[in-house]
Amino acid sequence: MQLTDARSRELLCTHGVYSTEACDKCGVLLGPIRWTIRGEAGVWCSRKSRDGVDHNPYVCRGCGTSLVGKRRGAMYCDRTCRMRTVRREVMDSANTVNMPVQKTGVAGVISAFG
Image (cartoon, rainbow, N blue to C red; front, side, top):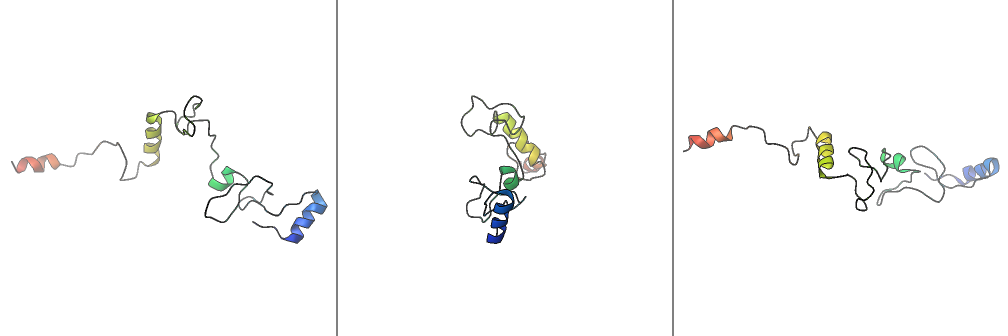
């Protein structure tokens, strides 16, 4: 959020800091580093304020093991851990990948036709 000119000057007089913006979520004064989302208005002080989740990029999102030695940008340690995490998160979803098909009684219908 943009600070008014009067508020910026007040901060300069009281704390010796001149800032024109503050975090949209927590109100922390922003310096040269800020977090944004392309195409959306708003600035935040950290990834946690912006996304609501603070994630270490060098740790697996599923099990928490180190990702040292994995490719750059890897989020999971392996496919098994990724699928386990996805299944845990979308268990109620009707469109889940690699889940066993429930018995639907189709075999009985097919055998009735010969």
